[in-house]
Image 1 (cartoon, rainbow, N blue to C red):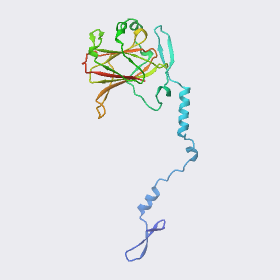
Image 2: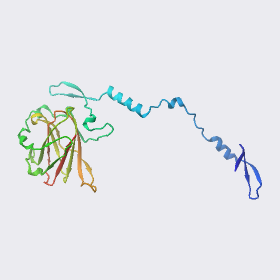
Image 3: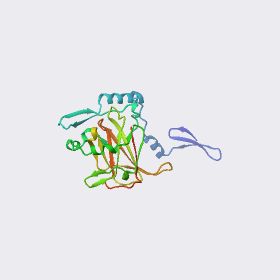
Length: 250
């Protein structure tokens, strides 16, 4: 079939005769109702940034408008402190998003009265293990160790110190709890084992069992306080000796 004119079309029947037939009115109306493609505005297209230009612009904005937080120290002095930013040497990449369950940052410290109460110096001898950056630490048999005293009694606990804490004061602490669904609490300590932070219940995300590992619960804690030195993990409701925890910070 070939078009003879705008309103006619040519066709050949079974006996070889050629016919010129008018196109149906509905077809002509449909043809005129088709939306026309808008003209391309090359000038408008040229205003779009390339990927490299966009990344450069975003980097400039981050440098000009650095994030900060406001906190008040124990003397009541207000501080505007720039949020520490990771670097390539910290083995962190900017394009990798890290989701955290808790954040330890100076404005969230416990009160000065609690920090100076001297609750944890008596456990100095319990910190016989330490966690180094990028080296997982396995904690076992909490029931067999030195119990942590609470207002409701003695509770099974783990104690460990943090070695080679980055000078920037920023790190990620990962806790992987296995073979236990019991509630876990955390006390983060500074110099002379003074408490800085208290989490009555650590929030965990369940990681299902796969062919390569058993099921476990994981909590990722953002640490933005260079004063942190040690951690106490304890079970407020108790637990069995089957429970284990893998600690890693980076």
